[in-house]
Length: 407
Image (cartoon, rainbow, N blue to C red; front, side, top):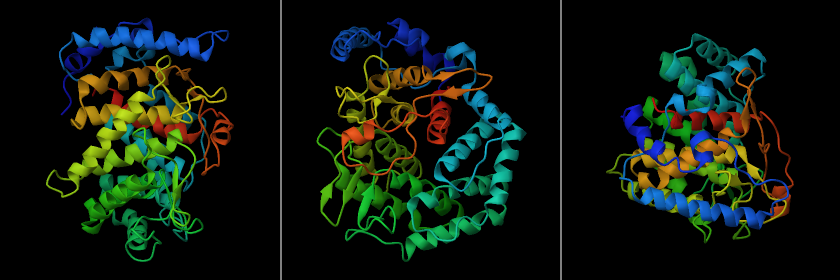
């Protein structure tokens, strides 16, 4: 149960030490200012904010009421309405599935029949899913069918999720220790983003259709992936190759965000009595330390390559910033991490995310990395284009927004 808006947000109002945190106005340095100068100044500002926080009681501050959002606008509603007016095309594609799950969350909050119509139209056209589930990516959109089953209890929405569950439980390929390959064409490879593609929908299927294998399998997958992807700075690398027995080069921001969101969604369904519950919470706590340590102190967002903040070509990526903000806020709300420490970091992330969002009548979200596979160098990740309104970013924004809005 969320605390009242006045209680949950009282502490954030008190924490509004800097103009950027109070107003959401971008505080990025001018073009002439060097990155090192900007970070030094930001670190000084962070110390000042931390000193101010030290004198405040440990009340939760992991969401903001609508009145404290830019222009007092419900930006999730504005975004969805803009996309509907634009008559967007949606297919069986994981970023579209992410976006549509975000629409479902907004529907549950706003009860707008237009949103339910959008979901129903897509679900009716995609009841059959795809012909083969040879990639975890191809499984993610089934989450939307399960949202529709939850809403209607119509069995037609369960057929494709059942086929995916059967694939995972029988002949989908695994590493020697049981981790699902990202694709059948990438033997023995675990990608951090993979756990979001299969596990939330699989756990939802297990809950709604009494598949007792789903939760235990999902928990096992999160632990296996974490074991192989761990980096020394409390984060994950993008990929582990079980054939070569080595990790990939880089800590790609969105792969980390996908894993974080999947971890919390699976924990939502994991009882405290589960033998691996504490192990999952420990992963949350470790990742939270890594995420907090790599937040850009000026903007509140996160770098495309998380551990390379001083690379001249590195840039602050919007979709992963939404994911990390969601993660720190929800983990604070659930009590997995200290809300008095991490809640303000989530709020700062939200402020930073909103710097990339404009025009409530035709919402534009900038700075989104399009779909990206495993790359061979930090420079390759940093060279990825920066898109506007790519559904990787729009979907992540909607999940973040539902979490960060006090309701």
